[in-house]
Image 1 (cartoon, rainbow, N blue to C red):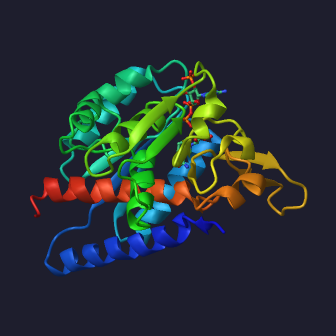
Image 2 (image 1 turned 90 degrees about the horizontal axis):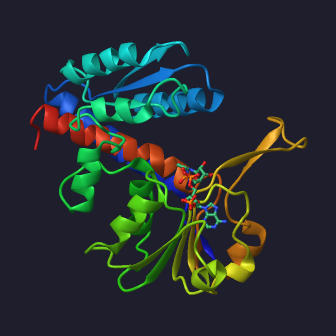
Image 3 (image 1 turned 90 degrees about the vertical axis):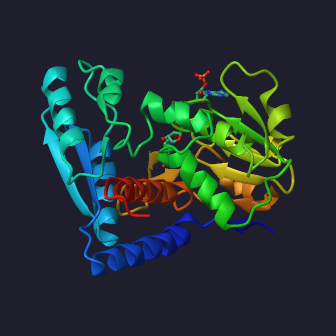
Length: 293
Ligand code: NAP
């Protein structure tokens, strides 16, 4: 019988912990932590992500501000906005919601973010620090996966962890983090050129799926007793729902879950922990900014 790695419940618990810490700091006379978000254009999914980040920030007592720019904003104007946020001492950390409009070079924008305020952990400095095992802002989704494994007490030492997907925001950093001292997994990182994928995934004690293909991982690809982390998020039309859609992942849960020891549901698994990690990174930036130990 499998157990759920319940990200929703865990995220409420961690939010309460952060809110308590913020209240205690306020009682000691400190200002509130401040997370800002930059959003360019009107992409629906981006608007939803930013609204969720804003809501969670308020729930833990942070100040949250959103800087909205029209689709037509030039790269130069956006770089000026980043410079402003870098230099505002009242803003502890900020994110630039991706994707940006096609005429803006995302890498130029990311490169302009101060590493000390880069709470998404996307700048080269933070990626480099993470790979070297130095103190760094770690990207939110891989950090959330690590939190789930740690808080649920999942044994990782010496386990074979197979990661499907090598993106810079999920697969590559999570493979790096889990291979480190502390987690001590033996990691195999798979991608679209991997041969004999199912053979590899069947040997996984911990299988992390970040591929972006709905229900790609089926029962034949999973070993009995494996821990399965499904990072995928897909909205598919569903007339029976009031919203007109439902959310599914990269794993075919109706057949895979019964094989697992632990599994993340979709929704309510990795997603809530991603936002928590952003809040934790903001707290870290805030303490560094105000020199709070
Ligand atoms: P991505 O940038 O699209 O990368 C997908 C990866 O999957 C690539 O490395 C690709 O290989 C690999 N891949 C594609 N087809 C494959 C195949 N047939 N066999 C093996 N590997 C294959 O994806 P991402 O940004 O990491 O996101 C992955 C999923 O997670 C998406 O559904 C996304 O919406 C979701 N997501 C969720 C959260 C959350 O908070 N829960 C956060 C971020 C992303 P190549 O490199 O060879 O092309």
